[in-house]
Amino acid sequence: MYKPSIDNMLSGKESRYSLVVAVAKRAREIADEIEREGIIEEEKPVLMAIEDFKKHKYEILEPEINN
Image 1 (tube, rainbow, N blue to C red):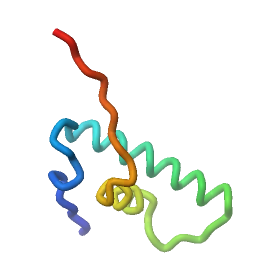
Image 2 (cartoon, rainbow, N blue to C red):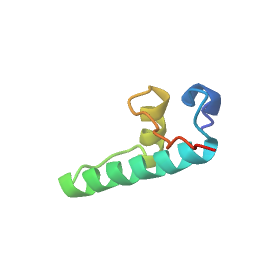
Image 3 (tube, helix red, strand yellow):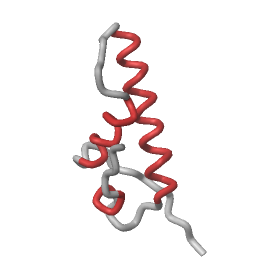
Image 4 (cartoon, one colour):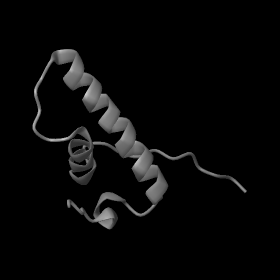
């Protein structure tokens, strides 16, 4: 089982929930691209999305909460 370090993917201000949502959205984008282009891919979209965040190709944006 693939177990990347979550702490390495988070820059300190994002929550784990935000990371999960972002990875799921990116995985859906990848799956849609693969389907649209008819590409046969060995690697699963979720693993590809995790790698994108691990390499910091994408940034997680969270709204600031003002008290």
